[in-house]
Image (cartoon, rainbow, N blue to C red; front, side, top):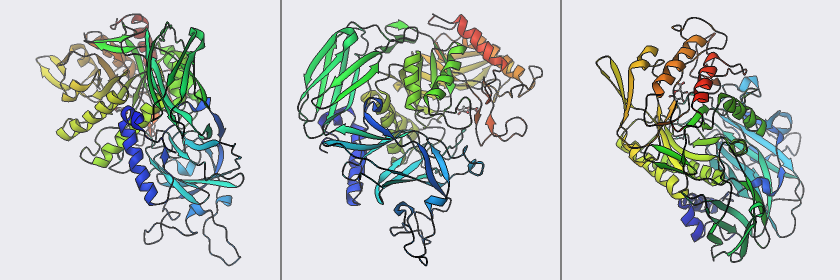
Length: 621
Ligand code: GCB
């Protein structure tokens, strides 16, 4: 494999290349395979699903990985060896065959009652046969495993991935056997201070292999990645690049958009890369007309068909422009929890139900908080015409001065960008949520902002900030004054006036100001209400309190001259270990407009009315 990171790829994605280079060196020194560059558009490849029931061993003390002195196990006691006693007297203290099963994809917490609060290691095993075609290469692809995954094939370590919400691949061309392969993962979701996210969050730490596992077969030299999109600021010029991987790096590649009668041929360079630009007459993608084109990319041996929408997104002063026209983003924040059952969402059906609720609210935009959601979600948003804000879990207070934490955050951002950069719906990368201002934090975020801008110059970068509050006479003044805003395209702001701070009536005397000539998205506001709990508008936890808060919030939002979007907190009640109040929370954050059983609360209809009135406008009406 020659082209892990040729010059072209290095320029396109310096960080991912750096990460790959480090992991190759580390892996090589230990005789391991390495994390391979991600393959774009798996759906268009020849694949075999490894989803279904996997055998599992729950291992709270990590006895499958370490001996009683804490040293890594290398002998047959290591669970990844899947060793069986050779005689009736042999000591072997684990057995996948009799330890039970869990579904993949799926979090473990909601599949077994005893695992609801479990944080630690679970070993997964699955056997498969695979007859590889001649002159083909085979990769193993994981949609996500939370939080670290150590991966072993046939008793040998392939490598380790860190970060619970982004995909990773291993090449297994030389390791896969026609029959009797056994794939074993140790997935560990123990929280740690240096991790991203860190120990403290307000969501459930769902562990497990939470997204699909796939075997992918590609030609020896294949189309690894590409970008095809309108040039920034244009709706007439297409600009992009294509990256080959394999021994034949110099060759002709063709890009066709049959519906637009376009066919262009280009030559890749020594690194397998080509950059291109051509004029095209295409219907721009938008929420009102989510037009997707079949885009065909061909090389000598490979052929990939993707469904791509073409649109441009930019800012001008305090305006956000979609295809050159100002737009108001009528949004809602969403956690990745299934709409109609417990646990992590991952499927197309999950995505459709959540986005249908958002559409029913009148949304043209969603904030996928607080970590990368599944690829199924952003692909569904492409189909359904819903603009998307994506986010990495740089949340609250992480270790700003730890270089490994920064590297980890960059890697997660990079993997997200690589996965989704061809999705028209995706317009904003958010690099942080409610992070306290300090020099080290500013430096940390600045590097993430630069990475997002340099890896994907066609999209906007934001962060959910917190503004300064002060009281002036009988008015409440809220001012956006965070130095990191200088580097953002769009400011996000979370405020909980009427819930954690002040009273609902204070919203009527609140004025927002900003030091920056930039658009603002009110990325959070909200109140907890238990569905069916009724009372007057002063009584906490009632639907009436939440409804009243939304009414006063909406009136306040209408007075902010630079407001260009809102994503209230949150579409649906979601599990959180921080939420202990019995009879009300029961380990759920109740700020949903929809309950965890899918019932709509009164505030749902307040927001729906606001969005009806703000349709086809660039400012809230
Ligand atoms: C926030 C956080 C969000 C919480 C929410 C709340 O500011 O960004 O993750 O869930 O408040 O409900 O307190």
